[in-house]
Length: 466
Image 1 (cartoon, one colour):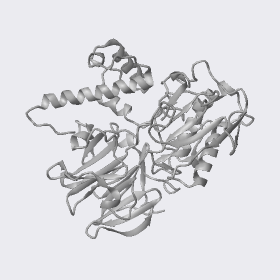
Image 2 (cartoon, one colour):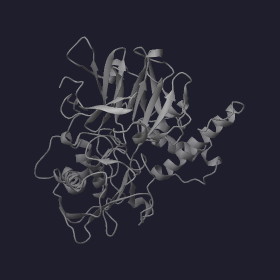
Image 3 (cartoon, rainbow, N blue to C red):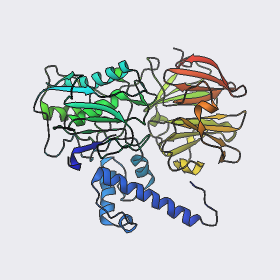
Image 4 (cartoon, one colour):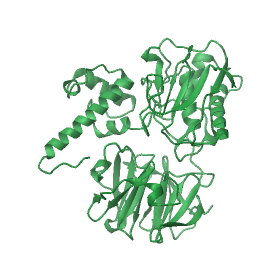
């Protein structure tokens, strides 16, 4: 099968005597990463030499500009910080096209009654959870088209669904955690229409990993013939974005795209608009932190502000308070000795001094001592008892000494070893009243760092007056 038919879905500290060499190496590594990205997703043809990545190279520069234009970034033609951050987001790998897109030649299924088979299961979820997620992902598309999807068990279906890691016999190996999440093939015989999910990712029915329903619905759009949309609200946008499955509806761009291939279903739907998340209805948070006695809960474009003197929570758009901050903050913590809050997204972090964003924000997380393999921080929390800040990513945590501003030499470690009882992943965390509070899925753990154990299991929404 031709390459155009495959869809791939989603520091070392140097001696101070050689700072120029260190910066040059970093820039070269970024350029290599960008080149591989553009080869995968923008059909860049290069020789893989330093000269082919040199600033001013017309082909390389134009592909950078094309990628920047698609994602709405400032079109510079340079591998700048914003461009690197976007390239490092978990995503799928279809060539990026404007509006809704379909594959070259517009391949579609000739039958409207399709079959699917689940070949194997991820151990991250129960069999029932996987079955339900897959069924609902197909329903996303059958609700707006004449298509039907029937599960079969004993022989190959039109769409074969499987979980695999690294090399898995389709010439498109997965790349480990937080990179390519899954891939699918355009409609056709044999492997056509099949969807593969990276087993190295943490799959979940909720928000404390990668939601299988969301990724599968995206992948099945590809399996039906759709390419990517440049509408950030669309399901078919290239990068992963969590939406509560109970509130999910297709956006107009997705509906227009799929109906251009198969026509409309019998029941018209109202294209969805962005909703304000409900505070207490099974919500999970992207990040939590304290700030001068207040507690801030971040979710997508919003944050809730809990002020001790008031019983009601304030609810705001992030941009209303801090226009220069991005939506989708992934981690945050307060270091009160400097009257600062650090907020993280991707490979960048922003510093609030008091309530003001520092002018030199954002900065790279790698300046804190993380290796370049770390692409995001899931959670962060400062422990005033030890003077350490703990960063969590995947199943590991890093210990950072705020006084020396350096990463502890024995970092990283396994979360389960350093914080027994809280599981192997942290979704959000904060500190108050001498305890650390860890959020994982719909659970919240109160942790005593002196005794190094969980002292209470709390409701996720216990701080929200629910």
